[in-house]
Length: 155
Image (cartoon, rainbow, N blue to C red; front, side):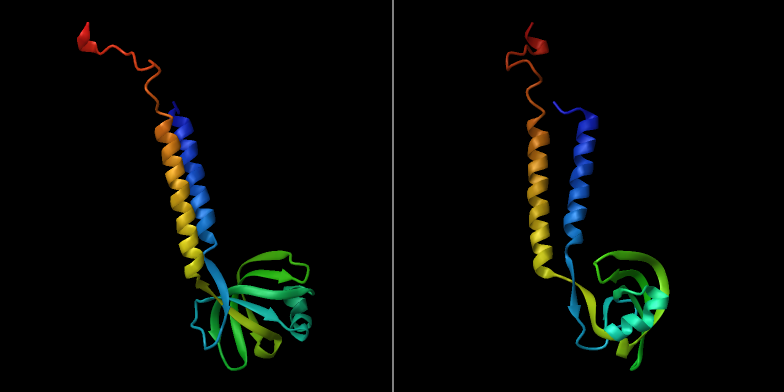
């Protein structure tokens, strides 16, 4: 039989696993029309943009992620959460505002909920939950008497 502490640990692991699975439900999709402020965006820089922004965000910056603050015909203002360099390393920021010229940005993608990933993640989470419930319920057992227990009123 699982004791209280083991059940608690199992539940914590289940919740952590479900959160991890559900985090994969978002993807970045190319921006076709204007994006509203507050939208999570990922801006891939041009080579010239990487050079121009080097003193501000790092000399090998390839991508800037964050929340869009303002968008105009010539600039984007982003509250930066991460900068990815050309080697794939991320540097995390705390929402500092950075002005990006449109000419320095090769593409803009926005974060969108992925229906396919969400359905898959929910399916996996349900399967994990069912497995966990089965394990916890199965661990209860018959109390260790082997089915030959004597009821209190039968003596």
